[in-house]
Amino acid sequence: MKIVLICFAGMSTSMLVNRMKKAAANRNINADIVALSTSDMYEELDNADVILLGPQARYVLDEVREIATPKGIPVEVINSQIYGTMNGEAVLDMALELAKIK
Image (cartoon, rainbow, N blue to C red; front, side, top):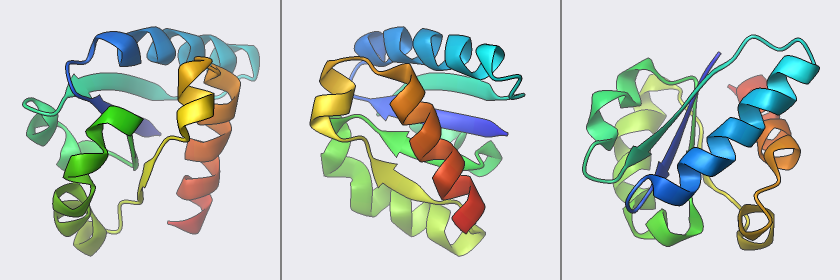
């Protein structure tokens, strides 16, 4: 499963990606998890199974949904509290739930 996280600059989200990768490894989940800035996000949108936006990237939600929804790719904004605590387990769970809906 490919999970794409998008934030404004890609820096804080890369820390969250590391925690998500660790959580996935601990649970034997095969996941390719990447962080991209809003300016680089178009590179991976078509390859994603799930797209999650950092709270600061909420402003591109409609644009990303316009591209992803017709392809059946779920898109959501990560809860600010979960994002702020860099809870990789919770964000991984969110992505897994969205993948089930797909």
